[in-house]
Length: 140
Image (cartoon, rainbow, N blue to C red; front, side, top):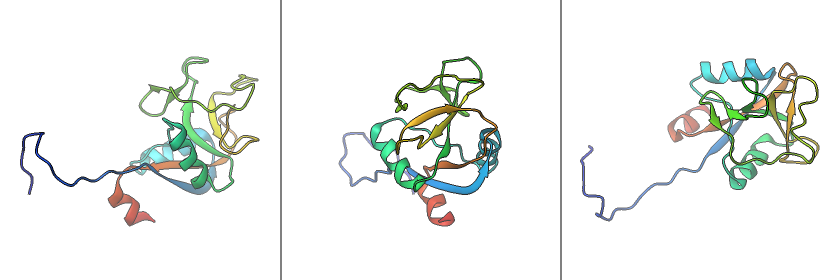
């Protein structure tokens, strides 16, 4: 049962680190984004170097889509579907370069863990965060 309690009480606690899962089907960025949302998930977002390292492990050497896009406004990178601005970045040198029509975020570009802007219609595997431990245990 739950109870409201004064915030100064001392109890054991549970921390949940982010978990990422590689989805093995290769889809365009838009289809990967839609597939994640249809499953109640979202493409992976990265807020720190530690999360980037966890995603590197989960990607298992694959070049994958993660949830960043600047399709709405060139150069203004946000995470889908929240439209939260991308604050932490790990761009490959010279990226993002917007060469052609590159509005989607590709992870593991040339150097493990590095990011690249790429055309959204290319088909890649994709990563999703696991933020619910119950879902993590049920699905994996």
